[in-house]
Image (cartoon, rainbow, N blue to C red):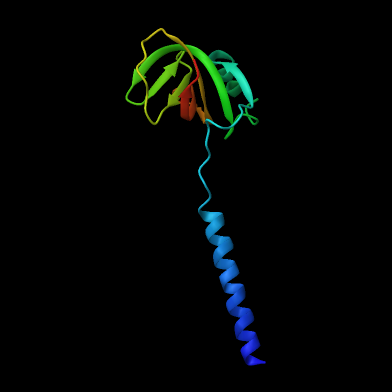
Length: 123
């Protein structure tokens, strides 16, 4: 009886460790493979956040088009409204019209910028 209890407890412990490990160490999202929930312009996505209609966008993949107004390091700003972070930013020029796909992480009220990360350029 005692031996059976030990075996059950050890089995439960092993199962708990396996489930906990797989929960904590999930694979990272591949934004390039995910379908965008919405296709918007930089002006329109900014309006969605200022009007409070942004719940669908948060932590989801969106496609945003706009004019490059600022480039710094591995990030750029579209129409002075959307900040896009890249792991590696390709060569771009100011005032170029591009389409960016990325994960929407929120709105910076201080700078009035919508924040996208894990971005890639589509056009």
